[in-house]
Image (cartoon, rainbow, N blue to C red; front, side, top):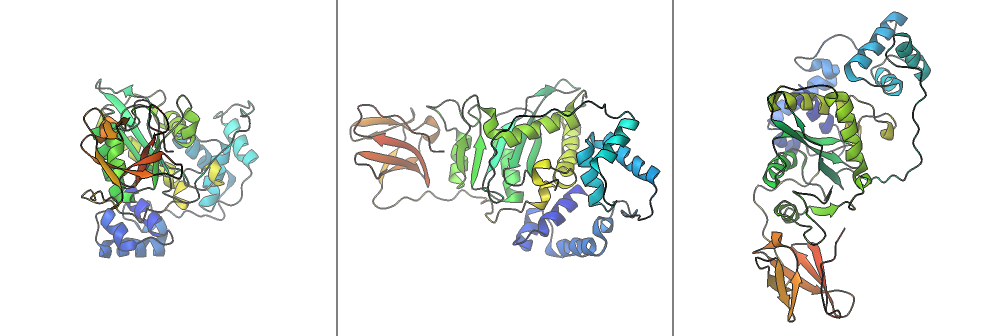
Length: 374
């Protein structure tokens, strides 16, 4: 049922290709139109197994409001600001944050301690969805059957929409590629992905590319890495991990990966479609997200270079030879052809893989090292 709600929320975004969206969700257009018609007529109550209880009762008594506040608090663990926004969104009328906090205080759901304040910091945000996705693994933990769970998370930078929250058995590149393939099939391709410098997306400054990130480049997805030892570069994903820990994982043990994934699926829907987000003026991430118009290609596109490009094949040690010099581009490109093109500076050549600059060669210097392209 959460999948239907997600489909309908995305279908309402301006500019969405409805037929393409139906295909990505694995349904016919007839089914998609049926869901949309029922949703327009009755809202979420028009979907089969949702409650048909009215969401708005204009003469609801104050005790009923208190019950609603406490129910949201007990279910999600949210504070007064989020509870207030959630109740107003479903038609409970205007509520003061102080009123909601007083209810929580009276029923001993919170203490009267002042909220922690954080010093000013600089935020950045992309202008539209799918310009940048942030990706990372949250720290792994043990399950009840002694397996380890490695949560893989992918977040859209503009909307904070959680595109992937997957309980993985490991952090291998093949595992990440499998989950990204499913994510790309549903939401399309982003313009760029941001990740840290550790495996499976990077090793160090000299080996910034891995088979996984080379695969992304072939798909036309640019790759960026955060500054070493600066997790705030991926601040939105880090904040997502904090919420995941507090609202799902804290002080709990889950039986196995299947049960863990079912909890992740429920919480991801709540995070995207129910939970108000302070950085979005208390709106939900789904209100700002729409799928990418760039569909995932089931077959990798061929790599094409210009007729004036100087081509070199990458050797097993990750190097190419150019003008009697060895240039390191990375072992992940072994077997591929790369192109060298003159830059705007005399004696300096840019090294391209497909459409992405991956290194630079300065013939004016005795030694050449790859230059990061962020």
